[in-house]
Length: 323
Image (cartoon, rainbow, N blue to C red; front, side, top):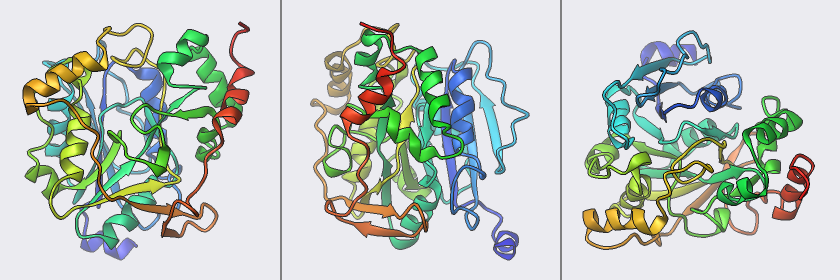
């Protein structure tokens, strides 16, 4: 591994993380991108590019050591949309592949880096999607109405001791609205999507015509254009996830901008000429045995099964205020 790094100092993957006013959340997210947390990754080189999209005050992460190169950039004249921040981050990236995390409040499970490395090795032009979940008993728009708060979330995270075993995040999380069937159905987006630099440039990156706060449907737009691009191989990392922490997001927290999906879809239609439709493409499931770390292609019959919604709700109920 050391010889390979000397011969090829470029990282294989550049993880581009966009953050805005989230000091609590970004700390955990960066830990899940650390070498000590990501399992079976000793033979993989990656870097993290953090773009602070105009936080007030700027996020303080300069002294953080995550065991891999971490470079941070602050956009003082930032747009309310993160599309430009994503494109800026990719411009700084040195990896052959980029993993786009448009929302820095997303924690990852421990096999994402190893899974992405194996998937890019086995496919000429993969589009690798890590599916999204919300921490808490339900989609966070619903959870907050049941008393779910950042304090409750902090206690849940402490309960599972996630730094020791990040797969326990599945015990306190629910599938997001973009992927209600999990790994067994079509999805609208991925909040950790891995593509080659070549494909990113072919797609002209994220479309900066999306100017709604939070980007509107820009992430859904990029995912759709990527998986529908000729010659790509869409892949879900089965058994892995990106977990959304509660924060004051545009479509998640209780103090949001108030824009509905229909309103965001109007912007999409104005740019694309018609409303958003979830892409229907053939997807390969790529998963690992968490004990051995060996990845293989799986089917719906032998793919990992996360805890049931009832089990998640029972765990979370212990920390929610009584009705």
